[in-house]
Length: 181
Image 1 (cartoon, one colour):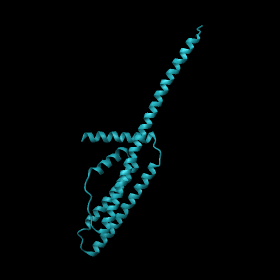
Image 2 (cartoon, helix red, strand yellow; image 1 turned 60 degrees about the vertical axis):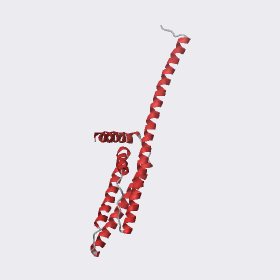
Image 3 (cartoon, helix red, strand yellow; image 1 turned 90 degrees about the horizontal axis):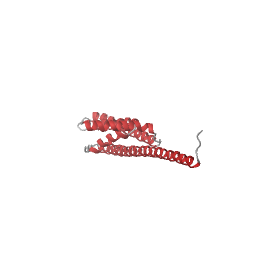
Image 4 (cartoon, one colour; image 1 turned 180 degrees about the vertical axis):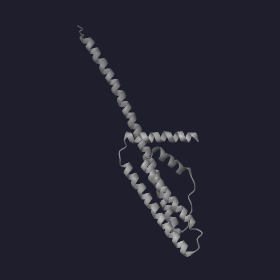
């Protein structure tokens, strides 16, 4: 039969303790990295939603001013809205993208109607078109409110690892697609 001496038992216990300490450290480090990654993704998502709300608000102000003044000045094209949409695709939740797309469609429908109204001289046709423009403005404003509510609901939830797996996949796919063009 094999008998351990006190020094051998002490060395064995020290080896087991050291191994457990190293493994525990690796597990804690991995968990901290994963949590930090989730936190960074959540911060990116919140930043995207902030810019979405800024853009939605500026569009609403444009609709209000244009509808009241009966003159429309289209906003200058910029890369900021394109960058915003790319970031929304990379980091945004699918339900927020759907609400944003609905808001964008309603906004540009209003722009199209407003542009059609410019050359109408017949008062009856002009009044009909103005009523249609007013309805389109209200629809765009309602789409904006749905977007705001969706974002508010989204940011009040605690992010989970499962939610971000899809976000990371979408981000990688968007980067690959961008690099192909």
